[in-house]
Image (spheres, rainbow, N blue to C red):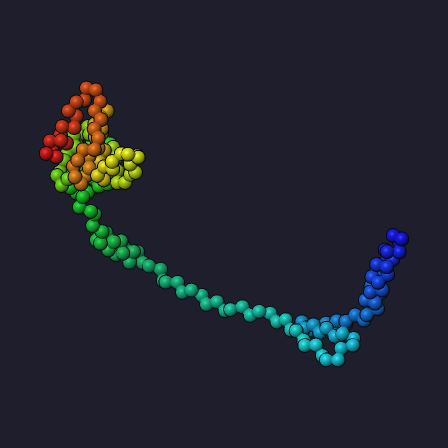
Length: 185
């Protein structure tokens, strides 16, 4: 019984395959102009021809290069650049700008709350704080801040208001920042 069910299925498939094998195949005729024409053996209307032509490449125009400059022309350009540059006035006043910090600032003059303060030869700007995030529950200090170090002591003072934010004084260094407090009175 199982064999009969398989035969009922296989026989129509075999008949379909035999019919497909007996159908005539289309013929292909190549030509010299890179075109193909497919003509079925029983076609009544001609099939259009497809032609493959090479893609034209655009013509590149060369980029003009300027003539080389003479030594005199280069010297004049350099002199013009030197004349046009004027350094900021703060460098000549020994004023510390916000990017300068560290031991190189010893003895320099800084501006706090509009007042000029000269740092002693052993005090320097440890940090210049321009932004920060306060810890939860803490108040935000007036920014920007100078953090000035002298010996093992440190003090942070607002540049704009002159208000002292924190002061850490090491043992034996009491009165270390009296120069700053006196200048800000």
